[in-house]
Structure formats: C-alpha cells, structure tokens
Length: 167
Image 1 (cartoon, rainbow, N blue to C red):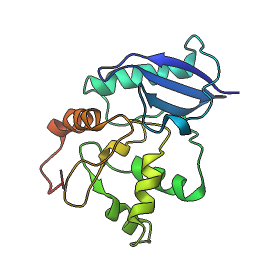
Image 2 (image 1 turned 60 degrees about the horizontal axis):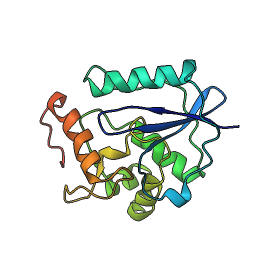
Image 3 (image 1 turned 120 degrees about the horizontal axis):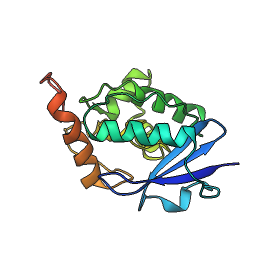
Image 4 (image 1 turned 45 degrees about the horizontal axis):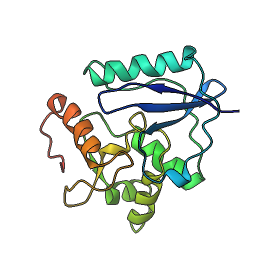
C-alpha cells in the first residue's frame, strides 16, 4: 500500500510516494496530467526512506549532490522503464534530446514514444526528465512547468563544463 509525505523545496512542495522500502513517485504541486496520477495512499510522518529523499533533495538544491541513491521502484511498462533508465544515465549538467535517447535505445524513429515515456516519469528530479530537451535546444513540456525545468537546468549548469551541450 502506498504512503506519502510532502517535502518543501525551492520549487514548491513535492509529494513523495513510497511502497515498501522504495520511492515510487515524486510529484510537483501542481503536477501536469493530474488525472493520470496514482493513489498516493495516506499521508504519513517521514520515516527513514522519506528522510533520505528529503536530505538528498536538500543537498541537490544546495549544489552539494549530483546523483541520488535512494531505492526507486517506478511503475510503468517495459519501454517506459528503459527510457527512465536512460534518463538516470544523463550526467548532471548535461542534456539530451528525445531523438538522442531514441537512438540510444536502438529505435531512432521512436523520439515521440520517448517523449511520451519521459512525460509520465513518476519520479521527477531524481529520475532527471528535466534534462531532456528538443532537438533544436528548446525547452519542451515538463510536468512541473517550464519555469521549474529552467530552474533545474540552471541549477545544474554552473557545475557543467562547456562540452557542446544542446542547451
């Protein structure tokens, strides 16, 4: 049975959802596609997992963390899982286009399908779907809104080397 807590952040409250000992969701308030959100279960006092998520997010927003190591269990089909695994491999401070991710999956014509899977990523920030941009370098849709996406990319940008990124 899922449970949830709310974590304050510089980009507004985040709802963390867990089942067992793994994080299954991290959602913005408000979150796009609200009609597709899962049941969050009851609001609980933060236990060990939620305290770890909150601590790691705090360090991330302070510029002291580039990767997260809390246990994750996002729910989705096999294709979505493969896209989310690729997202976790995009280094801090870098971006990829939907087409680049489709190419990495060995499905160069699947950029739109990659975009759809990216759009339903249930674990925002930790599974960094904000690092995916349009082929022309433009910011594209984001469940938290483009202002939050821009904030997250700018947060990461000062630490990144100028390596020909699209953004």
